[in-house]
Length: 195
Image (tube, rainbow, N blue to C red):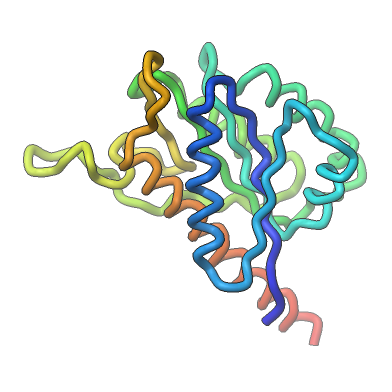
């Protein structure tokens, strides 16, 4: 089986989302033969766009500001319309993650925005597939998916500290692994279909 390539296209305003992107990358790299590239959507080069064009999967990441993705991420999404017109990202796998200072912080809206962006490009969305944690009297805030998201990985980081919650980093690693696993399955299926 040939290697796969995953690009994490993200923006981080204060460093929290960058830490989550690192955890996603670590999770993806835990699947043998997975090459992960990270690009900062606030300062994309031609080479960065080429990495995304060549990737098997793109994982979108952004903080949630004022109920949606950051301005830098929105600018990237608009710039991606050149790829939309040519269907350059059609049938690539996609997933997403976001972070905000509040437990909810309207992160669901941001994840919906990311999945809609992927859908406009004709990409195939990979959900989190983790049952919610921290939802019974015997569960713990250390549980994976402690915030109970399904569409992607949601994280909460206090505004007055650079730290990201360990459970949210574990959840992000899970998302990275899941995307890599399904990218490998998708690639194998495409290869089998052409023979």
